[in-house]
Structure formats: structure tokens, C-alpha cells
Image 1 (cartoon, rainbow, N blue to C red):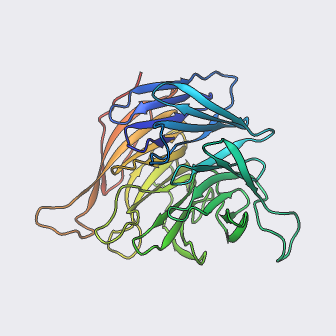
Image 2 (image 1 turned 90 degrees about the vertical axis):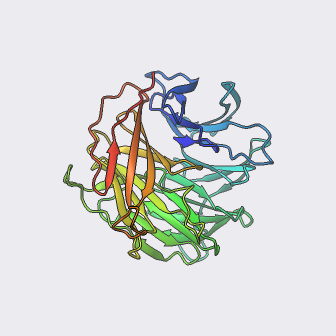
Image 3 (image 1 turned 30 degrees about the horizontal axis):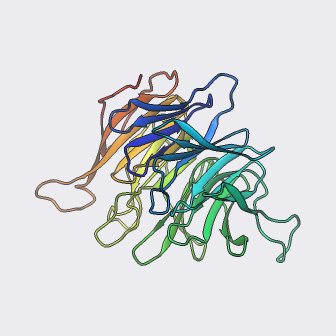
Length: 372
């Protein structure tokens, strides 16, 4: 699931293999690129190509699936522009370089493949070597579930998955130059934020019951903060994370670093939103969408406003507006600030309704627009 670069559309890949693009403002289906069927394997990951001066055609969506197929779609015309096959692989992750000229994939075979966007050819395969020791190149030993290109350095990208490591790859050297040990990723739960001073922070969301949401210093690989995540009061159990992401549009007056963090998963079946600028020195919980009857598998922030989309096993997308609101007489203290959540719920594929609860200090307005 992902927003288009201008925030107008939200593309979704569904368990029956179908690809649908919704209008973000109304929740209505704008384009259906590919119909699904019961025998099809799921669409596992997708990204809109960044809109840059180097990419002439706009509204290009790249989607991959569990049979190793990568498809380039022109959304507004509904045409499949190109198909790439990774033989004997299942693709679970992909990401574009910020300039849109390269993209990378990862999946079952524990290899990161980097493609040239113009020629659609694989330019390198990044993986480790068998064996142990200081001279053995590092890499993944199990499935890759998340890939993220560096925000400002076109030569660096990160990947993570089931082997409890984050690998940082340098495409000039074509090898891993740093490893972070600990995060157990089972979905699109790896992200990066870079502040105005150039300091990069990594976000990871792990599929585990304790300490699932963490932030790391990119340069040293040191753990900066383990964001507190208490067990859900509704489900009375921990949340095992499948998705985690920094907000894209929200910045402070003095920093370009992302303000909010969103993460969601299964077990407790919830999504939580945290504020990195709460004023307490720690990342603070400011909103929860809970009481869902199935797990949360993906989240994506709009690139142009504080709007987040949440998708999960109930086949429903929830689009929420996050608003920073203070009292007229108050300042920006942590006690004055709260989150107003506006929920536009769109059914993607035969889902049942989900009961939701928004915890204080969040408010949720149950104004729903259901797609056809």
C-alpha cells in the first residue's frame, strides 16, 4: 500500500492478486489495474515511482508478487508497461532510490537486487557469502521483508528480514558495509529520517512481543531509543509489528526530521501513532486505532500532509488525518497538544466491519466513506 507522490491516490495490493488505486480524498476506487481471483498469489509490495525531473512519465506504479513478478503500471491509463520475472523467487520488498533512476527488490532468496529503471535490467545482486569470520562478506541468511534506500545518499540502501539483522549496502562496493543486530522484520517496517544537520535515524518495527519499535543511529548502528509499547488494554496482549514508518510531511520549525511515527501489527491488532516532538525528551504516544478484528499489515503516510493510511487483514483501509491542535491560550506543551483523527474507511475486498477505539488523547471521528 502506498500514496502517490502528490498524495492524490492510494495504491493497494490485495491478497487475491488484485491491484486497486483509490482516491485519497473520497475513498472511492479510481483505477483497477488488475483483477484478482481465488487461485492467484498475493500482491506483496508496491511503490509509486518518485516524480522527478529525470522521470518523464508520471503516475508509474511498480508492484511485485509472491511468484517473483515485477510489473510497471501506468496508473491513469491502466496499462502494464513492463514485466520482470525473478525466477524461483518470491518478492516481499521493494523501494525506489529517491531520484527514481534505480529500484531494489528483496524476498525469499535473501538477495537484494538493484535494477536500472530506464533499462529494467538488474545491475547488481547484493548478498553475503557462506561461512563465518571477519573476512566473510555479510549478508542475509533468510527472507528479506523490507528495503529502504537512503534519503540523501544515492549509494546506500538498507534491508531487513527474518534473520534478525539490518544490512546497510554500498552499491559502489556492492557489499554490506555495516550490520545492525536485533530487529526481526516480517513486513514493511524499516524506514529512515534525516534531520537538517544530516543526522540519519533508522526506524525498525519487529515481529516480537517485547520492545518491538526501535530507533537507531545510522552512522554508528547504536540503539537510540526503544519506544515504549505497553500491551493493549482491549486485547490484553502485545502487538507484533508488521509495519512501521516515519511521517513524510510533518517537520518542526528547526528540523527536517519526521515528526510522527506510526506502527501496527497483529496480536493486539492495532496501530499506534507517536510524536517525536512531544517535549518530554522521549517519543510519546498520541493516538491509537485499536479493537480491530484482524492484524495491521501496512501503514503509509501521505507525502504532502499529515494523513496516514492503515491496511490489514480485514480487507479495509483506514485513512486518518492527524491534526496538531492547541488551546487558544496555551502554548505547545505536551498537555495541550492532542491528535484529532478523521477516519475515512474503504473496503478493499469483502471485509467485515471492524470495531475501533481511539485512546486518549486521541479523538476519532467516525465519518466513513465506503468504496464501491
